[in-house]
Length: 122
Image 1 (cartoon, rainbow, N blue to C red):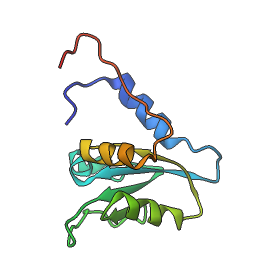
Image 2: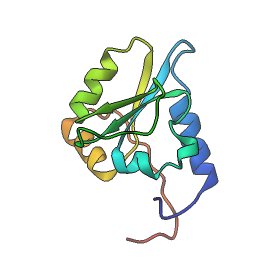
Image 3: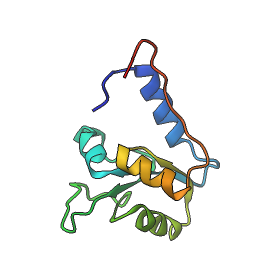
Image 4: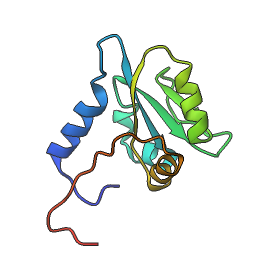
């Protein structure tokens, strides 16, 4: 769960990850299992995006029958599955911490979008 609720930030996230570079494409979001489960079920899968859930649980059930939900065992598996699709625009890594770290370590990020929350100290 996010430690704060900022509606404008959620709107920006939705718009950024939902709008592909061209109308015939659809963006993809890659997330860990815990991030997937933190999304209220009524909002899963995230609409207008291919949702890829990373999990090491071989018998994991995402609870979704949507063709827009893929399960992957690793970031490499996720990108391999996405590369087989012919309608994917931009790929976004949307969490959690281990998935972010894997993407940064693998050097697959070309941009980082982040929100700075004023008054929040670690």
